[in-house]
Length: 243
Image (cartoon, one colour):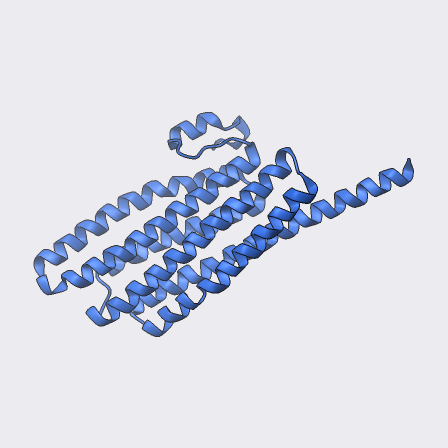
């Protein structure tokens, strides 16, 4: 009996280590993606086509990491057949990987707009708006990953609320760009390029919100996708609601 208990503890210890390793690898990928977003923003603001090319070259590394970690998750599911919270963790990691890969794609799109803008203007149109929106988005991504690492559903809910601020800032940015195009027809092409870049940052924010929603699912077992934020509060247990 003692030998059987020891064997079970050994297997359980291995399983926990596999879960921790998969989580760590996913968070490392998140850190790489965050750096890519920051580099894309810098390339856009500085109109540096060389830096933009470097951002796009990261895509292959990020895609490779997604495949590797997703394979880790598949092996855990196949060999361990996890249940309850452990199953939600593995599924959440797999879902987050997909959103991180999409964020990498959007970063590359921003980089391509930076290259185009470097040929269209001396400065990025609506630069202050780009900086504000990108700052919100990057903070959302960083906070969502931190909430995942700490298994903090309350912090994840706060991340999801950042989506409302992005919407408000995007409305202001689009108005500013429309005004700029009316004032100077020669500036139209550059303003449209800036709009595409801002749309990519907006989508990165959407993916960060998705990650936050997966954290809530992982911690509480509640699927809050497609739910309005006020409705999310009603779905969560009292312990995970803001005070």
